[in-house]
Length: 205
Image 1 (cartoon, helix red, strand yellow):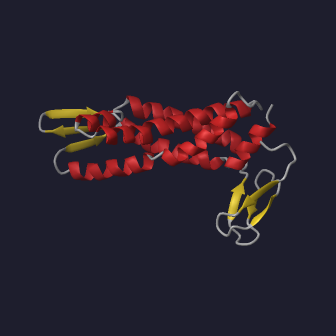
Image 2: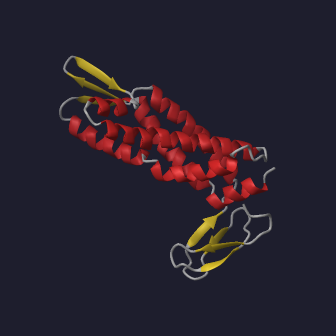
Image 3: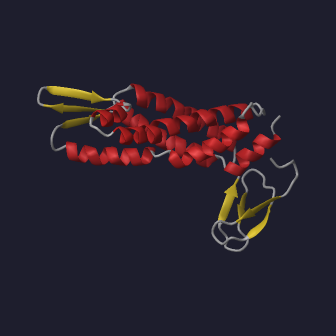
């Protein structure tokens, strides 16, 4: 953790230019002096916007897990599928490792990101660095690589197109909540830059 006022050297990921990162104010951004790529920025009201979007994502994630994802009706038979059943269903079909992967990428990773952001941003809103915030911040941004909710949604849409010819499909509340979750979580992570979050953690009490 660097001390307050210390210079931070950064390298541009596009052209490998190496220079000292300047201190920026709200609404400003840092551009590579060599290739003009945007390296990081400080959005207006970023902390409150990210916190609000994270709370919305947490609510939508709960809705997505407790309501039917879709309803399948064929003749006089009707069945509903919950989001969690995408994991258990794969296990029952003889693909336990695929089920573990789906659970990890679509349930565990988003839970870690949402819970971690709520913990970090909740403390920063009262200008506090809560216990364990620094390692948690690292894990939250590592978990971003494992969050594949968009891939799961794309796969679900492809399955819907195929199953639509065999039965009547109705998208449930969970499906639309899942779409909203992806939008809110993506917006929350893009509302506050990683360097800004890290700096706020260093400066908090």
